[in-house]
Structures are given as structure tokens and as C-alpha cells.
Image (tube, one colour):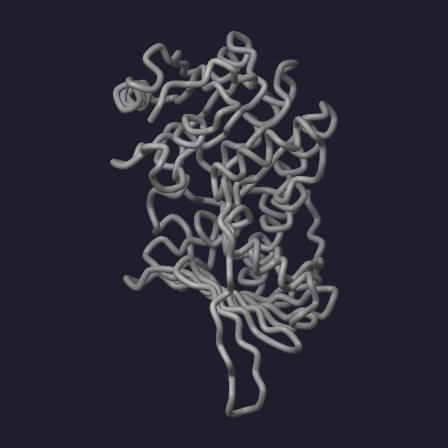
Length: 360
């Protein structure tokens, strides 16, 4: 990995040095795989200079310095984010802390005069009140807020969205998303699949019915630990109706078999997507379903570095973020509605939820 380009014009800081924040894979050259951490994305993007990192745990700061010494030999470190904002005067901020800690950091970053854009890990928050605070603060200060639901910048899933929007397969009728692995937790990883459902449904959820993992009957508010322990959050199954008629099914389960997939069935065809494949099926009859691979062009920037690049491009040229604060809020609202349905005996929960009650 090369040293930072001296022509960079965006100063960035990073808060939270866990895996998605700071990991450095064995092969991290510019010719390697797409970045899987915020630090790696900053190291590879030509228009950004990462000037400082922050974590409450001094050991995480020392580990970061050791892992990235050759890239950032003079990296400054902090245990207090507000102190870092004041000293570094960044224009970009990455918030990669535990889910329930996002809100205060985003609000304080937005109120820092130098900050112009924030990339926040998913989910946006753990209560609607917190999500609304984040959106209100960034809107009031004219700061861009992007929520890092990774697959919205993945060429496979973006091409599927383009094909759906083209009308070639007809209108979307049903969506079926499945998530498996021992970490198929509602907030931690479920947020990705629930966001994908929203992405392809292209409407507003009208109501939801859900069933959580056995043993979580009293899981009425977020009680996770930021995703470290799978037992801190339940898996879930849900049926979601959208205002445009789309019917969606979400199903997750903690098991050894890993992975996720989403199937979008349209009036005249079907898309089957996972991180391993993308297929288009156009049924000619009950007995003939021609299947082809979805042809996907290469992207210069994908996934996490795609999110960063979109944020910088929108900051410089204007436009609409693909995963802004309100989009992140929609996903959180569905998660909270699933919890409310389970709490009330798998009852139908109408949306929108009351933000003063949901998740607080």
C-alpha cells in the first residue's frame, strides 16, 4: 500500500477501531481486493488524507499504529472524539463504533464547523429518536450523512436495481431475503438484508408482522453489545407489506451454514442474488425457466470505498446519496416494528411508528 498522495484535499478522521473500522488484511496492495475496513478505504482513496483516529481503548490505538505504521507513520491518536474534532478540523468523519453510540458522535461531528460529510456504520442508530437527532443535526448544518449499508455500492446489487428500474422484468411483486450464520443478529447483520428489501421494494413499508428467536420474548429495546456476542440479539422472521403492493419476507437463523441471499420476483421474471452469484430467470412456461447470469460491469470503487467515493463526489458536485439518513431510518424503523410485533404476540404493526415510543 502506497503513502498518501500529497494532492489530497479532504481531511478525515476515524472513530472506532474494531474490525470494520481498522482491519488490515494480508493482501492490501492497491491491486488487491476491495477494502473491508474504513482505514483501508481511506488508505486507497486518492482524495483523502486520514489525519487521526479515535477509540476509547488505548490498546486499540496502539494496535492501529502498529498495523498501519508504514502507511501512516505519524498518525495522531485520541480517546476523546470532541477533542479530536477541535484539534484536527476534519471535513470527513467515519463513525464506526457500537450501534448505540452512533447518535451523539454524529450530532457532535455535524456541529463541528469544519465537518462537511459523515460516513456512519449501519444501523443508523438503535432508536428512532436517536436517528431523528442525527438527521436533524446534519440537515441543520448542511452536512452529508451516509449510512454504510455496503451492498448499495456493490456492482452486482446495483445492476439488479438498474434492471428492475428499467421495467424489463415488469413491476416487483415479492421479495424474499434470507440470512444465515451464527451472527444472523437482527441489528448487527440483519440490517443489511432489511435495507436490501427496502432498496428493491422502492416504496414505504405499511405494516409488518414478525417472530423473534425463542428466548427473546422480553427483547423490546436494543440490548446488544455492539455485535460482539451473537447471544446479545435475536434472529427474526417477518412479513412486510409495502404501500405499493410489494410483499416481502425476511427470514434469518443462527446456524453454521453461512451466507445470505435475496430473491426479487417481478411480473415477468426473477432475480436471485447473493455475494456469490447473480441470476436472471425469465419463465416461458411452467416447464421452462431460462436462467442466465446477470452481466455486471466492473466498478472502480465498490462497497466500502464506493460509499466513501460517493460521499466525496456528492460533496464536491451535489446529488443524492443512495443511503442517506432517511434511508437508514427506514431500515431501523422496520427492525423496531419487528420487535414490537413480537412483543404483542406477533401482531400486525402499522407504520410509521411513533418515534417517541419505538425503541426508547
